Image (cartoon, rainbow, N blue to C red):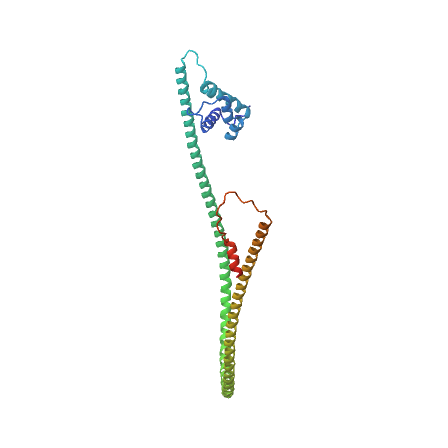
Length: 320
């Protein structure tokens, strides 16, 4: 028996129409040709869109749909026996019908996608709730097991505690007898301790007087040392004040030396500029003396007095 196809012809037709709608093949755009149809819809793209399907079966169904959509419906073919205007209106009507069908397919596909996504979200939520309930059930089982174990442990501890209480009562009787003898021994020890405290108190009095004497001696010594250190501190402060005055004087002298150095550097730069201008003036004079004299013009003209150049005047002022 032949294996049934993974997808039906209706699913293939719906998918192809949706792909054409996504490619905007409607009356507002030029009608699709076979080349445009194959560019938008191919066996590889259709199989990738469907996720399954026999390539041979997909190719046969795709050829049929192409014949219906392109060659029979959207291509500009001549309809025998009809005027051109009526044929054009029929083609426009057919294109409008195809566009409406494509829009309906896209809408149905969008609604189906949204319903699928909602169902998938609901399924995931249900799976999460089931998983949470399973985790809670496992936790409750673990808690029950832990409580049973704790209850058994408490019962065993209770039995052990009862046995220990019996032993403790026996030990208490023994300890009471020992306590009576210990109280008697404690009275004797208290008397001996009081005698020892009296002896220690007498010794403490002697040590206290000795400590007071030594403290007084150290206080006098500390007072003398403090006076000596105060004198040294005063001398150090005076010496620091003298050093501060010396530092201020040296800083003032250093500032005056720096100003004098800057003034000397400025004068040296001015002298270098004057020397350069003198050198340029001498070169100009030598060049003028080597140049041959021009013949005087026939027409006599009154020659204005030579005016010294600003550069020469500035050079002479700097030289003076």
